[in-house]
Length: 202
Image 1 (cartoon, rainbow, N blue to C red):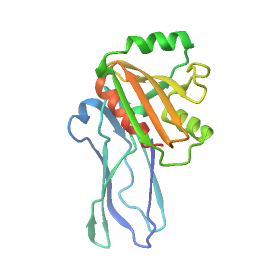
Image 2 (image 1 turned 180 degrees about the vertical axis):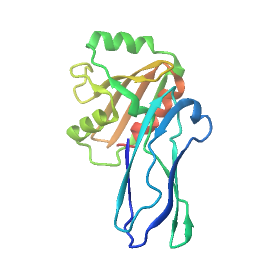
Image 3 (image 1 turned 120 degrees about the horizontal axis):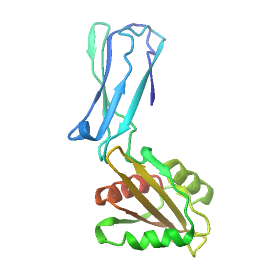
Image 4 (image 1 turned 90 degrees about the horizontal axis):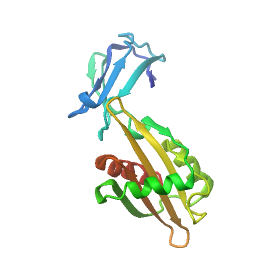
């Protein structure tokens, strides 16, 4: 991940120090290596920082970025959420319809499934929906669902500790302006979390 810090003022930022903070158990779930940045950022200048992030095991809360610096002699310390979510570690997986349904049946325990029925927050456009699902990280599988209006996806979340297989099905109902989203994974917290994250996109 590349972070860019821009000083839009005419006054130099001094003692500039961005630090990644791991809330809760995140230290054992994500490994983040950061490259150091210059301690001064001149007025109108921009500096870049590179973060190398490795997923050790599944996580629910994103890391935080604490940025400390002095502006005109006054200490500043904003804290921001980094856009690092579990789906960033997706590897898209292609599979045939027969394999998909076989795997779907294998993940049939109630705790392996998360489902959400919700109202559309944006216009329901099939091409936009495809782009959002691909952007989320899963592969889109064509000619799998008997209903051609539905979207089906598959992927594997790669962590250092284990791989979590994920299957998803998004059923739009244009008439009611509603969606039904179903996620099945081999790990209960992952199913719930991915379902929450993906539902926010629509």
